[in-house]
Amino acid sequence: MSDTTAISYHYPNKMGRIILLAMEEILGRNGINAVLNHTELRQWINNYPPNNLDMAFPFEDLSRIQVGLEEIYGPRGGQGLALRVGQASFKYGLREFGPMLGITDMAFRLLPLPTKLSTGADIFADTFNKFTDQQVRVEKTKEKIFWHIERCPVCWQRSTKQPCCNLAVGILQEALYWISGGKFYNVEEVACIAQGDSSCTIVIDKPSS
Image (cartoon, rainbow, N blue to C red; front, side, top):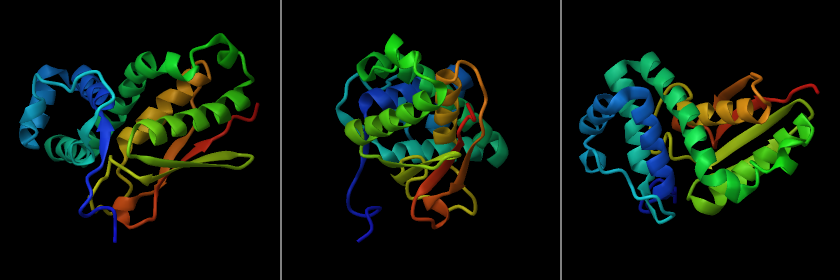
C-alpha cells in the first residue's frame, strides 16, 4: 500500500514554525495570511506552531501552502516565492539547528570546501531523517550530489507535470551558498514524486576545488 494513504506524516513544530516565519519574511504578514486563508489553514494565522520538536505540523499543510502560492501568484510567481521561502527557511533553521549539529563549529567551517559540502549533505539528510517523517537518501559521484527525498512533504499528494519542490531546492541552494562562503552552484530538481517518479531528486553540482 502506498504511504500516501491512511497514514499521516509530520514535521516537528519547530520546522513548521521556521517555514511560516520565512514565509512572513518574504510575503509580509498580509501575504502569508492571504495564503493561509486561501488554503483553509486559518489555524496557523497569527498562531505559528510552538518552538518544540513535537511532531504536529502535517505534511498536508506544507503541500497545501505550496499549492496556495501557485494559485495566488500564478505557477511561475508561486514557484519563485517558494524558492525564496526555502532560502529564508535555511537561515532560520541554521539558528535553531546549527549549534546542535555542529555545522557552525569552527572545526567544520575550516574543512576543505568539497569535504565540507559532502559532510554537510550527510548532516542535513540525517537531520531530516532523525527529526521529521521526511526520508532523505544521499548519493554521491565525483561531480555531483544527488539528494533523494523518498517521502516528500513539499509535494505531498500532489500531481503535477513537472518538478514542484521549489521550497526544498531553495533550502539546499542557501545551504550551499552558506557552506561555500558565498559561492553559487547549480541546484536542480530533476525528478519529483508529484509527476510519478519514485523520489524527488535534487542534483547538486560539486565544486571542482
